[in-house]
Amino acid sequence: MRRTLSALAAAGLVLLGGITLAPEANAATTYGCSGTLVDTYDLKTNGGTGTKYGEMYLYYSSADGGTNCAAAVDTHFASGVTKYQAVYIYRCVSGTKPGDFCDYDRSDQDSGNFTWYAGPAKITGTANRCIMLYGRVDDPSNRAVADKSTLATHCS
Image 1 (cartoon, rainbow, N blue to C red):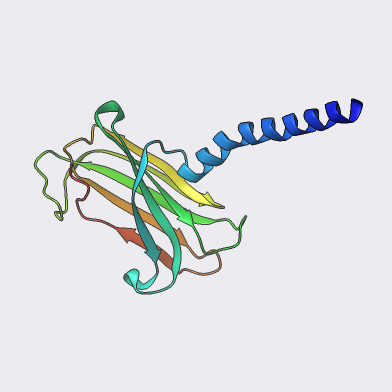
Image 2 (tube, helix red, strand yellow):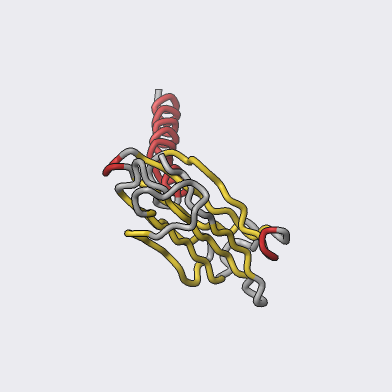
């Protein structure tokens, strides 16, 4: 009987551990953003033709009149290596068309020296508005920069 109770208690702790870890794992994979992953952009050197240092992720939620959120994530360097990273998001003014360079009326950014990712950068009120994005990951040992900027995109 005592062995059965010990086994049940151990199984309960394993189950409880799995339940408490799931939200943390989910939060880590969205980089502080809520909503659905709607796009991924490679962050490469040499104007997009060189080495890939990371990815920029874009999420969308219908909350608050539409919310877009982005993060620039290092996928190249060893975990724990500090380097400059940045992510910028801009809400284009009404009437901007996809592919245009846009004037914007709201922006958010996160930049600095990070070990894994920059972000989240969030903009609300994006339903029926275009956004522009910029993401960047620098090589920590030299001046190489991997980045990506978009023109007006995700306009609905």
